[in-house]
Length: 407
View 1: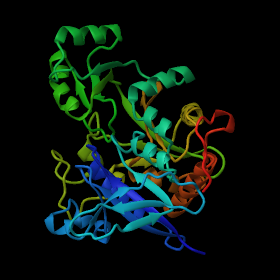
View 2 (view 1 turned 135 degrees about the vertical axis):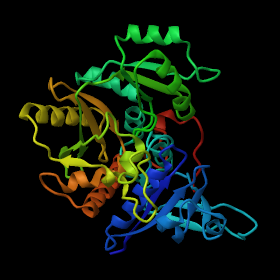
View 3 (view 1 turned 180 degrees about the horizontal axis):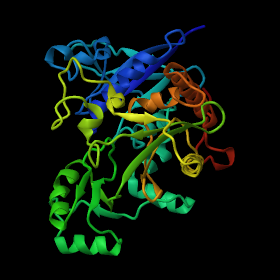
């Protein structure tokens, strides 16, 4: 039986580029080699699409001048795939070194992007345009759930508890918002200090800050607006506790993974603590030989002991949201709560969580190994593509205004 060719896409023009590279390489290594022939497609921070065997080795990132000589820059063939044997294709870009175009074909795309321009529906829309099967959430779901403000609107309609919030848009000029305007927005949203400010479209705790007064709030805005065009402010939750759970229907029914409880050393885990933990407490860094892998460097408790009512609320709300968004893939849904009062709120959704959240599935009630989990996502991708199949000529006969030619 011929192996399916799998293109694993990662990197990208996002503040979470480096985390995406780590997750992408983990996926590449975990795929079942008896079923699939996989290859990496790396998108650089300036948007170049590259293929080549050296991209399999983490030690080669970020690429230097010598490494660039060993890769090929490609572009996606967006000619619609009619699902009759035609595959997705990456075309080598013309240059003085190529006398003809080389084609890299594949059956299924696995996008492993975190944050902007990859997790937010952009790359998904491109694959939809080209008719290429791809894993994960569809375009609409990815776009909605990567926007923390739009997610709140959806939660409201579903009756799922969430924290009050205020949205700050990046000014047309500069990065500062007058103090009186900030105070008015907080007052109108019933938010007091201390509060949390974070980018509206990023994850991995990038740009998240606790602020105690209006001056600190204003001081955080330039850094956030450098990375995102809007910010969201929420109340700071005292006695903070976090719970995360992933959801998927690759088994046929909507199922949830193990629940994890991240263990915070400080009031909030910052980006380096999550992904480069174990080194100096001030920076969270280690030397390159001992950097831990992705989300596995975050100290966590899997399947923590929870009150039955809280566990049921987490699982029920997660399934309700997943089904409402016509879910696919395996998004991770994050909750925050007050461990003294027992209150809990849905905080945000990660359409493509770090390391694909595979450890949550391996610790589930019915454990699912990473390679089997990925195989399930690939099969789902092929099914989702078939569901959306159109006729070769999608225009109904009664709507045709132009003459069709034979051949």
